[in-house]
Image (cartoon, rainbow, N blue to C red; front, top):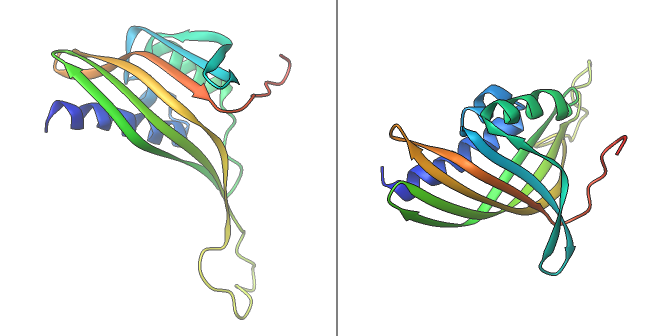
Length: 162
């Protein structure tokens, strides 16, 4: 597998771990000194930080485990990342990608079964977040690890108690 594909796979593992709310898996993608910061868009090309950065894989694991809301019964989320721009220079890489997060909510199957005429997927899918992921990676012991990760949200973000 070439370097660009390996870097893209780190992104794929990152979004899948986020969707599963798997802090341990996601934290394992980062170096111990990594810095993760979320930003909200304040103008056409400007952003401001949202909260404090997470530091290292342990900080990411803690954040995912303790600050991401669990999915409701029958619920999940799915990330879609597109237009990956990847630059590799030796053991250093940069990745930038668009993302959209979808909230998925399955309808509960009625005890008496689906009504006549019901067909196909039963539930809803709706977009809930969009923006860019911008990350720097470094090869450590033959594996690509994230050293800086910025989440650039397109919309304001409400945080309870903040």
